[in-house]
Length: 315
Image 1 (cartoon, rainbow, N blue to C red):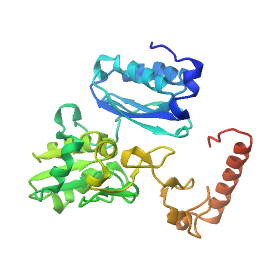
Image 2 (image 1 turned 135 degrees about the vertical axis):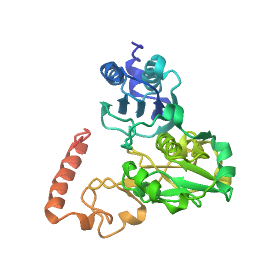
Image 3 (image 1 turned 135 degrees about the horizontal axis):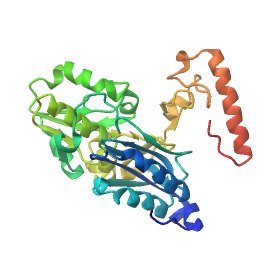
């Protein structure tokens, strides 16, 4: 097993912030269950939090911690021959963006619910961030946002189709019934880090579409590499951690998270009369009753109490 970092390195990074690494890799991994215990132990030993998913089709995760600790975990994964080609994207967080360390065994590393797909060999064509603008500006290209509705609400590429899905499982049904795809010469898809659009491209290829492209490294790679004055991206990109959203240069956006429904909140949302920290927001106020809100208020009280004691509330 890779070495543990020193206690000093495990509690601080350059500038006092944390390294965040997002990664995935489709590969044949029949021994995936054997990786769970050593990966979990290594992450905990090195002060690394986040979630890693392991399945027979590969690995998917986002982790954060001290620089050296994060790289120890990534190096351990790459030591497995099947995962040697694993790539990751780095960004930074001023505070630890995850509360726990989880390594989970799954049927799929990103759940679509369609059997027989092989993204490792059957996916569409990668398009690098520097070439993405030219592709999506082509009038013969239909551009599809493969993320969910609450994510696209924060930002998307100009002219992109929003399937309006609540779950990635909904994408196949949408694609099979979408008139927008009929007769289109080229299809370009994107998502946060690349994993969903890569699997979606494999699905469309299996459905008979030929010219299928997807953004390599996803929106995060685009926001990292493409200058804002050349960008065709509008808004912020939702991320699945305590930072909530990122903008160009992978800077933290101005969004927070509703602790009742887990939807992202804008400053306007927080100014609404329906917003109560930890209890409700404009998106979920009508979905909950007063009994629910009383429960959430008690939880929020426990969160505040833990904060006064210098502890993180994990509920």
